Amino acid sequence: MKHIYALFAALLVSSATFAQLPSGAAAPDWTATDLDGVEHNLYSMLDSGYTVVIDFSATWCVYCWNYHNTGALETLWEEHGPDGDNTVRVFFIEGDDGTTQADLEGTGGETLGDWITGTGYPIIDNGRDIFDDYFGPGFPTIYTICPNKLVTESGQITASAHAALIENFCVNTEPAPLPATAYTGELVACGSGDWSASAYFLNFGLPTINDMTISVTFDGAAQPDVTWSGEMNSYDDVFIDLGMYSGGGELSYEVTSLNGEAFSADEYSSRTVDVLAAPSATSLIEVAITTDGWGEETGWSISDENGTVIESVAAGSLADQTDYIWFVSVPSTGCYRFELTDTYGDGLQGSQWGSTDGSCAVRSYDDNIAYYSTIYDYDGSYNFSSEERGMEVVSMNVGVEEVSVAESLAIFPNPTNGTTQLNFNLAEAQPVVATVFNLVGEVVMTENFGTLSAGEQREVIDFSGFNAGVYLVSVQAGDETSTLRVTVQ
Image 1 (cartoon, rainbow, N blue to C red):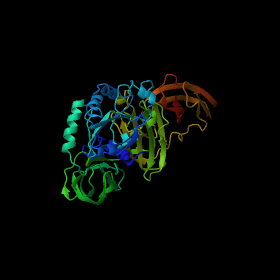
Image 2 (image 1 turned 90 degrees about the vertical axis):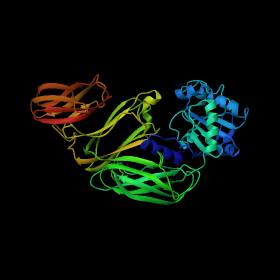
Image 3 (image 1 turned 60 degrees about the vertical axis):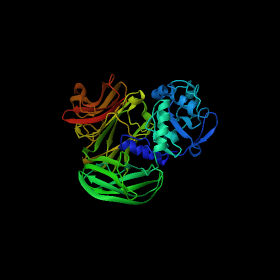
Image 4 (image 1 turned 135 degrees about the vertical axis):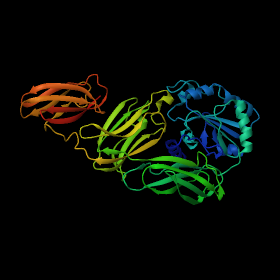
């Protein structure tokens, strides 16, 4: 089950460049059983005076494997674990629940080697929930937790550096309230109406937060301070309204006082977001996605301003490293929202895991199937859990399926992976030309069938060698034109 911490981590990924716990945060408690069947509880170990070092890794992760093979944590365990001065506990927590015991043993299909042999400290498998609670930005993530329950990301350092960090951090760091925030309001200004700004706050610290003052600026102009009072204990959360605004611009906010005292905001307690004016669009929307190496993580939807979904593709239905194109005809003018989601939280940036980056582009087209506007354009170069873009549909297309030259026009088979047949009737003899367009309006093939006699017609178009995707076949018979879509597999 996903915890509220995982929700907040997803918000941070989508609105900032970090997602790990801040240094000095309270460590979330956990209880888990290691490969030997021994149960461990974090707070029990901390209450006993131990410092705990956690290595969140995955058996397929190259950087994890390289650091594991340095032996740094094994040395730390030997010198400061039960057989050393008995001040430290070390854990390897496998954070990808999709891997298996065989992968840990080095014999599975998602592993770089044997992780168990030579590892004296406990190994915990299926630790994704713990990894989520600790906001791990990726593998490996290594945390040091002091007996006072405060945590810092120690990283891939040597055993001696770990020991020095423990001595310095655990002695010199005192518990403090730590507000962290993620923006949850509107990101698109559509039409002439107002939009609302809001933010989510979480107390990463041990002491309770009883009141906060939040300063806000929009498009360079200071707005009235927002105040909040209540009881936000460690890992409690609250949503706060930041006001109503109109038009696009830059919204910034930060915590300036905490529990009645001045507070210097940091990267966790402040945000700046660009609220974009929604681009104009037609009612014919194209969604083009190239998946990365984990296509099942990707999904998308288009919804209206009331949240009603017009069209969607759920995560779990797309293949890896595959090109997809969909056309969506929205039912009326007005404001709409496109959302692209990734269930793992790494967007389509497959290159960071040794695959290829994916991409997504959303465009609109006019009645002539000519490019009208770009709504969203993502090149796979950064991570996210979800991204949204708005669009203001200002004109309705007649629709390519309604532009009829001959009522009988049909194409079969569709989809196709080679030749397909055009079927249509002509009331009288006339010249017929078929033109094939790609989805950016480029002509990719023209077939001139010459002057055909009146009656039923069957003409062949060969799509062999075409890239997979959707194409538009426009058939001109005399002065009339009809257009159909064809999917090439």
